[in-house]
Picture 1 (tube, rainbow, N blue to C red):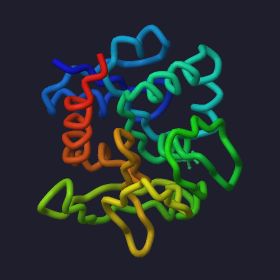
Picture 2: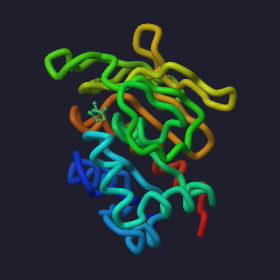
Picture 3: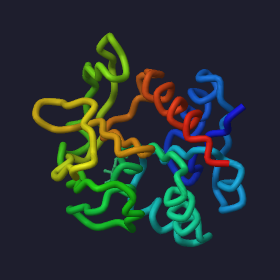
Length: 194
Ligand code: GLN
C-alpha cells in the first residue's frame, strides 16, 4: 500500500490523514525528515505560511522536502501549502520551497470574513462540480509554461498541476470533497519513486 505523508506542523492534519485512508492509501504524519523518508508522497496543509515555513527550517524538513520533490516525490499543497510550493509570493514572503513554476499573492481574496465556500468544476478530476472552501486564500498571479490549470474560479486559476506537483488555493478537506485526494493518490501510485 502506498504511504502519503501529511506535514503535521499546522492545519487540518487529521482531516487530510482521514481522506488519504478513504483513498485506499496509508496516511503518515510527517514532522521530521525521518518520517518523510517512509512517505511516497506529501500533502502540505493550509495554515499560516510564514509559521509553517519557520517550523520547516528548524528540523531541516525544508531541505528534505526539496530533495525528495527534486527526486520525483509527488507533493500536493493546499492554500498556505500552495504558497510554500510557489516560486514567488507577494504580500509578505514566507520561506519558499520554490517547487512549482507559479507566482502567488498572499491573502488576495481578503480577510477571514471574506472566506467562502463555492462550487468548482475540474473536468480532468471529476465529471461533476464539487464544493470547496477558500480561507484567506492566495491568488495565482503567474502560471509557468509547463503548468496546467485544472480549475478556475472567475478568471483565477485555483487548481494547478506541474508533473507530480499539485496545488489548490482552496481547501477540499473542509467540505469533505475527496476527488482531489483521489487524483493525488493516483499520481503517487503511478510515480512509484522507491
Ligand atoms: N493566508 C494564509 C497564508 O498566507 C493561508 C491561509 C490558509 O492556508 N487557509 O499563509
